[in-house]
Amino acid sequence: MPQIILLLLFVGAGLWLYRRFVSDAQHLAGRSRVDEKERETGASGTLIKDEKTGEYRLRRDDE
Image 1 (cartoon, rainbow, N blue to C red):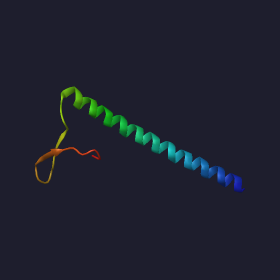
Image 2 (cartoon, rainbow, N blue to C red):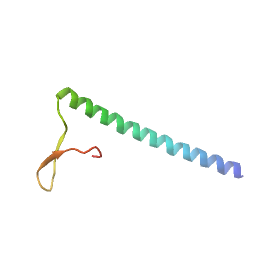
Image 3 (tube, helix red, strand yellow):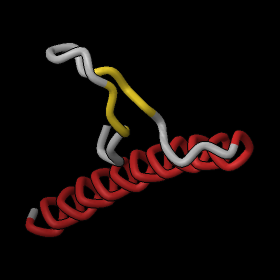
Image 4 (cartoon, helix red, strand yellow):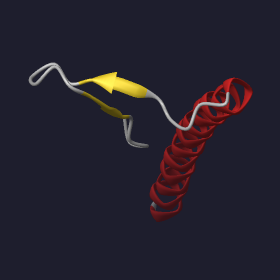
């Protein structure tokens, strides 16, 4: 019985790590596409509009 519990823990940890890996890979691929598009257009960043103030600012990496 302890072997089954240990096996289930390993499988659960493996699934969690796999999902995290895929999520990070998708995030990096998306960021890479944005960087490539900025290089092609010669832009130094992407401006987004702040809904509260109406001012434009550079997009941060976590957005």
